[in-house]
Image (cartoon, rainbow, N blue to C red; front, side):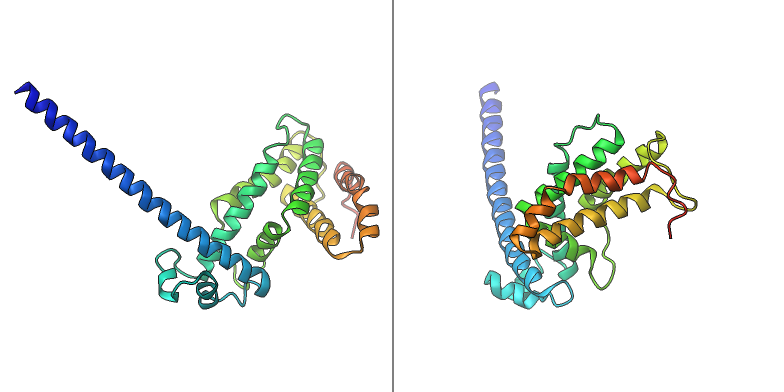
Length: 225
């Protein structure tokens, strides 16, 4: 009887392992197909922008039928969010390299420099993030987007809480973070559009430009218009 029970137990384990292998292969195929679609979608998004993104064109580039795409994505907003999530995840990995124990002003500076370095090596990812933020209608925030905002806004909130940064009347740390984000985005875009000799000059001063902005947040700037 014991031998019979052992045989049944081994049979069940073998069946479970076969089922697990089968599921993992199926999941891998699903993941590979999804990645193929996202690769094609990224090409179309960067060429046409969020407003003109077409699921039909994505399907053509990925060599799928339009109907097959709906097995992986509900609509084009779902595609844009998935692309942005991957890009923001890659950016967050760079932000993770910045030491968490730095004072808020130094951490803000290093996060800005990390963004610029990331943008230099991954211009398509930065473009995807910008396109996600500039869709004609607001898209729900993805998990990666929320985390990214928490990291960027959080350093300025810490600075205000610790007395490093001074708030103007009626403003909040979010306003500081948006200003810093606009500055690094502008510097990154400038690098991509200007002549190499001008880019080299500005790149050598990027750290200084960021420090000027951050140091300005330590003073009373409420009188500015």
